[in-house]
Image 1 (spheres, helix red, strand yellow):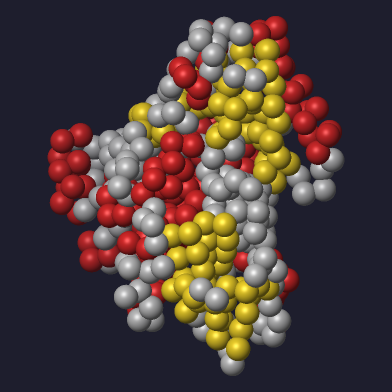
Image 2: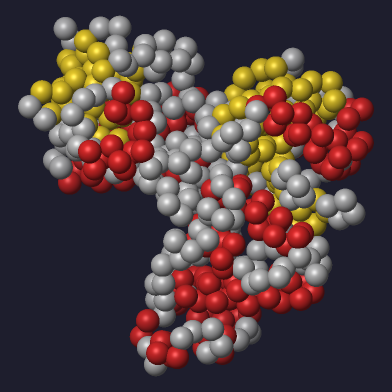
Length: 477
């Protein structure tokens, strides 16, 4: 029997990034994947001449975020990213950029004027409190909004919540929306903020804070203003967070990982793990098509499925895993027989009426993703847990054809995907697993171990945290 340093369960983005990083630290790694293809939700495949991704993707924090850190330190081959572009809102009469600053919200006339003023005040207060360390992770978006807003305004807030957390504004936290929309971040220094204030000639935050901060915080203003990034965005969104889409599609990112794997990594597909093997409170391998032994096991499947793979997990841990919340998404891919003026942009769009969608014309980034002179657009919807999938698909097509009536005659390919976009939804009460499990030498990585960002970026965050924990435990070298 061959023994490995590490067995990685699952060959999605988290599993492959785990295998890559640990192998570059000298580990002999075995990756076991129950499906016949690797990549999970980080993949692409062909449908009638069009290359579709597993759901629309925007890769965030590319300038200095977690994926960039992994690429710079562990990748032998680097994918090329095209600049993402902008986020837009489509209505029956309008097509305009999503507001990303207070100034934008004031002039965003999709909403009634009084709604805009009320939302502006709410955002200002939330950003200010967040900057002072007030925890908004248990306050829902709905509860943060003023009362008596218009139906359209509530629908917009609900749509944004769904696309940032997979749940409605009643279950999505205010903190999640602030962070997910990049209003809150830690990358701006005090010196950069002071320069921003000087260059842009905007009011200093003190004049804004007086109207929204509790009186007992006024006196500590100068000593406590350390997280200034969100305050800077109150006036103008100057600091750019890099976002991109990989040239040649999402599969090019997967291929960059695979091509960077050294020979010390072995991948077995079509190999379902039946048990994680333990003895005396320690993991020592797995049972799949055979018994595989290792010093460490890193599990990157659904953490909530761990109880089916092993016995004697503590009741408190079982309760934690039972609290992990999942969301289900539907992506409708439409191949168009020609490019359409309605999709003549770089970026993505949101339709927030009734059944909201998030859409990306991905062939605008790379024309080779569609046949010559044709276009490929993905429309993402969230499905309610108890919703009939066939009914959800029917509603999705009706929404698309209602929002963009001219598209129906242009469709020559349609393809539907029902996915769980991430292993845990970021909700007010939703739980996340720890990197360390209760079993020694068993670790967990993936999008249900880290709340930050979304998709591949969140997977990268989890792998970086895994490396930190393994190093702390003396298991990295």
